[in-house]
Image 1: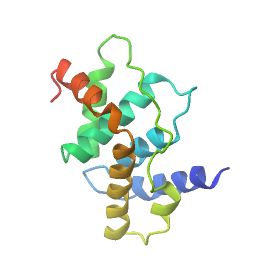
Image 2: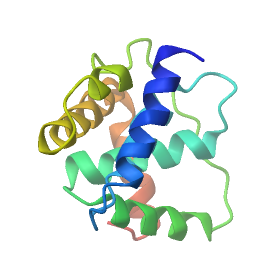
Image 3: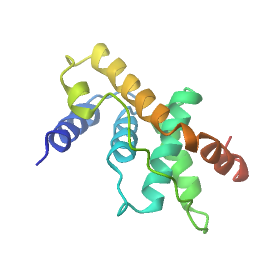
Length: 138
């Protein structure tokens, strides 16, 4: 298992046991999915990851809110957008976040990771916002 895959799984354990009603686990899932996506990744996975990152980084929403939006999008039948995968996906990785001590400091590192990955997808920001506006979700 690659180092980032293992770090992701350990972060999942940390966030699932976190007990925070904001559900920061969703932010970890979204950041990792967007950062590790490749040509084989289904468009829905990339779309949901970018939607979650947008809601968290740009709108200050919780992971629980991102889950609700994902469910609303999933109820609608349509073709999912195809996003261009940037060569650089952000300077912070799952392994970097895992290296931070558990607690508030690691939680802030998760936020920084999300911001780093979201910034890497700068060319997709308008399309993500347009998708959410089209469906009345922002």
